[in-house]
Amino acid sequence: MSQTFAATAAVELAVVERSGFVESRHTGSAIVLGPDGEVQREYGDTASPILPRSTLKPIQALASVAAGAELTGPHLAAATASHTGTDRHVQLVRDILSAAGLGEDDLGCPPAWPEDRDTRDELVRSGAGPSRIRMNCSGKHATMLLACRRAGWDTAGYLDPQHPLQLQVRELVERLTGARVAATAVDGCGAPVHAVSLSGLAHAMHRIVASSASSPFALHRNAGALVQAVRENPWVIAGPGRPDTIVIERLGVFSKGGAEGVQVMSAPDGTTVALKMLDGSGRATAAVALRLLELAGALDPHDVSDTLSQLPLAVTGGGQDVGTIRAAF
Image (cartoon, rainbow, N blue to C red; front, top):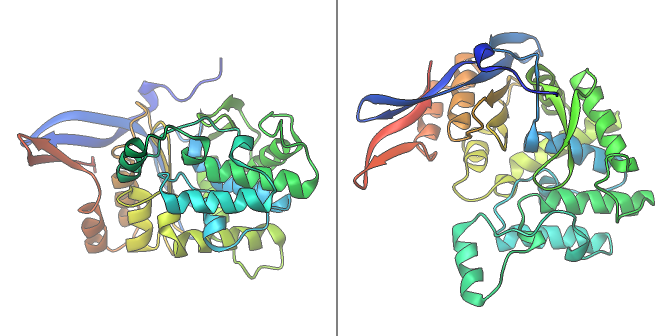
């Protein structure tokens, strides 16, 4: 059976403090690449495979764009989003589906409640229930459907690992990571997700963020446009109060979190971090990634501390803040 790195290969990346007492510890692995793409720091095992979960979305989006899903601005950002299902997000997804001549029922992702609390409360009051278009991966799925329409491929089976689009995704994953896919699984949204090493994931993200929208090469041009679209529309990639959106808004960092404690971040100078919490918790991933970028000299310490104060890292007791979740270094 394929598997990720063992506990004996992990290192402590974050701690949870309550009233001055370290209550919990998160272990995992991480890697930092400098602006030139060379390894600056490694923590734990960065060579064993992990499932990148939603941090794979930028590559999936680029494969869809290459297949003909020509999108710009916030619609392009929605292709790589893990959105919170607000009405603004849903409108973007509807626009993409409309361009494909398809509807919500064509989405292959499962029905879900929006993750945005206010939006969910409003839906409950109106008597509505979970829907595919509110699922946080619906932008990716709509973009995949648009790509199939443009390329003349079947839309009904677009999530099959042997579908032409999914084969194109896999080929691009291997091209950008520089290694063969170690295993393929089914992601929470139903799409194939390919196991790669943290090192490979970091190099793929570095290649994407280092690309220019004016490049003569299509892949680099599309990657540059994707990163620009996310940085210009940070609300799209996640939502109000979410770590990725906050980090992008305040620091201009390209940030993408994934389920099971995976996180990638790239500073404006190209310094890139990829990490995986072994226990699958994502509550400390943004804090650790930001501190790693700070240690690498890519972000100002004051700016990082100010941004961390805006993230949901407080530990509460009796209705008061009594501690924090923080990086262990």
